[in-house]
Amino acid sequence: MRIGIVVDSTCDLPQEFLRANDIVLLPITVRIGDAVLADNRDEEATLEFLRAHIATRGHEAETQPFTTQQIRDLFLQRLVVDYDHVFCLTVTRTRSPIYDNAVQASFAILNEYRPIRQAAGHTSPFALRVIDTQTLFAAQGITAVEAVRLRKQEASVAQMRTRLEELAANSYGYMVPRDLYYLRARARAKGDRSVGLIGAALGSALDIKPVLRGWRGATEPVAKLKGFESTVEKLFDFTIGRIRAGLMTPTVCLSYGGELDELRFLPGYNRLHNECKEHGIEIYECVMGLTGMVNVGKGAVVVGFAAAPHEFKV
Image (cartoon, rainbow, N blue to C red; front, side, top):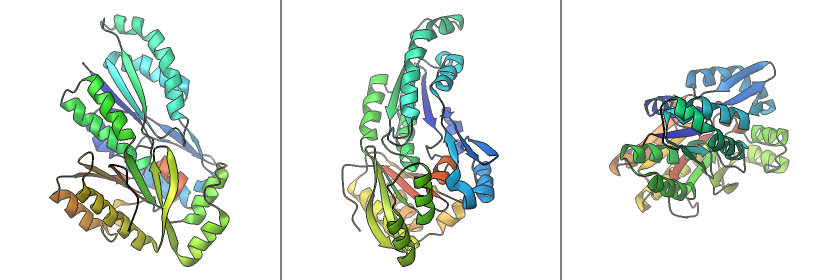
């Protein structure tokens, strides 16, 4: 059976990994004033756009994910012919309409695919499963990497579905933002009151940085620590602790809102890499997607992994 994997462009994985494993992307379009760019996970284009626009006007950006009609067209024009079953892994539905759009599109796709497949010489049925990863950014990468691994092992559709849904409920994304004023301005532009003015001002004045967690559809602060680099180091050390306790997949995903050389110079980065190597954990790291950066600002660090329920403690 030919199994396809679809993600949206908030899924932070290296572009070469997506290409090498034929992962299909649902791009999100970003508009800042007259500048428009489709977020196709092109790191160079993202960094260029970042240098030109995000620093000053990113909080004003408008983002437009694939609509129900666009998802329907993508499947009917290409995917129902290329694959027999597709897993569509989306950013948490609490932060984006992509999941709901994909579910809505699936009804039309399953009603209309038969003549298209028959014309291409395929007589078997087509099926798809939309899975809400319940998290975002680097943490979305966990289910995608596992889907690739299971496909290579020729796991059945039922086995893949069970495993991916299990991981979606246990994938954690931890983020340390660099600029709380930007985060608050962006949240206000979107009508999100989760980052208040007092909290942003206090954080900047005292150099307090929150650790935000994306898990099971909720995004919330789980710690407030002093200093950006110190907070990132504590997050890396916390991740090392979770690795030692045992992860649900041999995978850690990292994304950074800027040049990766900056990420690699942060304290604790080398310790995390050494720990992953010692435990047979593969690290996937990439520049944060443009959609992520316009929502959380430059310089944010995100760590994603799958683990049993736990609390963030340093």
